[in-house]
Length: 143
Length: 379
Ligand SMILES: [Zn+2]
Image (cartoon, rainbow over all chains, first blue to last red; front, top):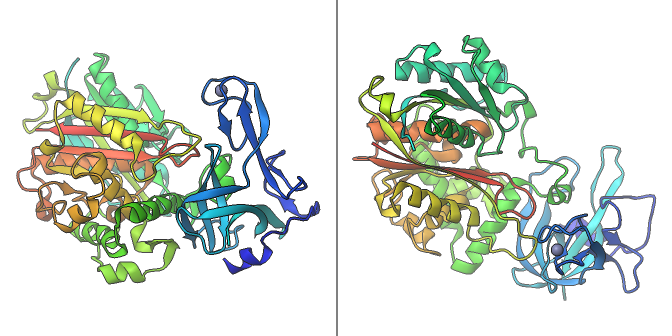
């Protein structure tokens, strides 16, 4: 966990480093820091992360990009010791509940607690087969 | 709707067989089930084979070994519910009137992947972010402990119970009993789970011969009848979801009880999907064996031991018997049938007349589980 904390809030745009996220799911250079970009269905208002091309609630394909809140509440978490080679271990994962009704599965950092507040950041979470760093979003304990 | 009865069961001891092919794991289970039924292979009119990761044509590869070919063979994939889903397809094939005698086989060879956690679908979003199956169950455990005050020592008593049962089962992969202290001191996998709170990976096969009840008396006298055969999928939820209660099993249990005309108070023995320690506790509640939040105390009361009021996982469950995915659902039925026939030897549940099997799985984003299949049997 310490290695993740050390790299936390590494928010600079650093394009030669591999990023896990496809497309525009994580916007690094947004005003106010990195932000997750999910979807909002124009048919029924359903919000989702990540953004899919079709709405799971109403099957509408009018799903537009929508920024997710940067803060959330931790529903549950676990420290993982056994996982595929590419991940730096141990690491902490959990489900973060956002105020807009979306639950995000995320890496975590800091001393997290169930029902505790967490904030979005970015960190290195592992290395790919060629030894390049893999980065992703990480919610960190607040305060 | 025609009644369906079980006339034969067989399995190979679960374990690690890296040198054996999937076909060579499967056929001995089929031969054992046919031998148990005492019928010639040519009596089998159709076969359903469940495997999650066994690859194409698993049923043909197995049945080709013993010449049981030229009949319809259907291969079924439904993650950890593959074997029990194959069973349900077999039951429906007889119920429909199409066939009288059907073979079901569940098979898996996990040693081909080496060790570690199960390979998951990389296309899944949460898997791409580092989700592994133990972590998914571990988060359920953490939230349950937070909400209901379950202690780490209570949680550790699940593998203690199931390993003790497995020690009595010659078909179990793990046959040595463990203590609470050993469970808690084992290597950590995903907190709060240690290695002894996670089912082992391994290989296995199990088979079941089904017959229309109207014809089954021609085969044997001690019949076990199918009272419910239930299959459902998880409901997709993108937002908040209570992880301390498995919605798919709660729904499936209600539907299975309704189909059987029975309730939790009628069940004497159950094989439930204890892939990780917390799972068995959640299923006590989902099946109505005890009330919400009381599973830890229910376990500690001894109610779910072999000599308790509702024996849960007398075979050792997934934690001790092992969990070769596609074989699991079929092997649970092998155990229930042996229990209901009174053939379970030192782990026999006294007076068992009604039993239940439950296989659920498929860790995918937005679902409690992908699939859940529940069967209820009675003599
Ligand atoms: Zn919609």
